[in-house]
Length: 273
Image 1 (tube, rainbow, N blue to C red):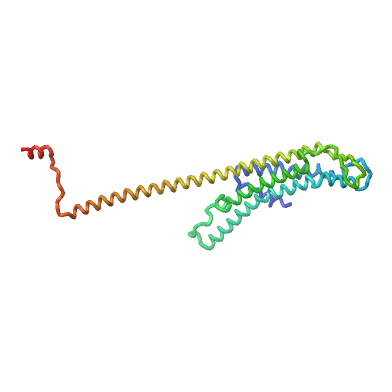
Image 2 (cartoon, rainbow, N blue to C red):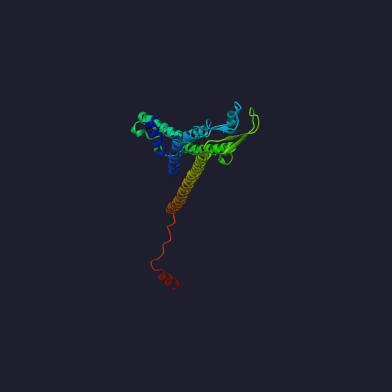
């Protein structure tokens, strides 16, 4: 495996994620991927070899093992981790696509041609929807695999003894699982980390949606405020136009405007006398 490419992908995912997304990324790649690679494969490496049944009937142990372990824990976890991490890589690919389009636009239009994306890594437009869909997909995958694990292994635990009575076993036989306590510990650990990842995805999804709704409300309020200012300006302008029109009509008339005397009281006295 090329760890340089893997490190570049992780740094890209971390760069374009929110704070909740960075916590999710750390939890997945430290507490799930590394635990899976370092420990889980070794614990389940001898599960078939050390699955013992108290019978010598040929094929009985193989049939009982397939009856109780229809799908291996390790293979289910591998498929789960692959499906969970792929949407984050799609976000990085979407950002790379926008950066390539912006570069081609700059080469074609020049420096004065404007920008297709002022910030290609900012979650706006299609990138916002890609990120939101990735969160929904990751939470759905983890929840689906938890349901699958629970349907195969109730309470996510393995018993010490399994009673099997399928053909070609001659009768009900007892089969013993290798290291059941250790396997239960790692199973519960992987289940708990998956639940925490689901919670982080839901919290991040709620954060993004609430932030987007708040931005839309502020933008609508700003447009309403700007429209109110324009209406007030138009009303004041119409009033000024009416006053100017009245002045023009008055100035165009033949009769001079009545003038008030400088001292109204003297005028009243003179009129009485």
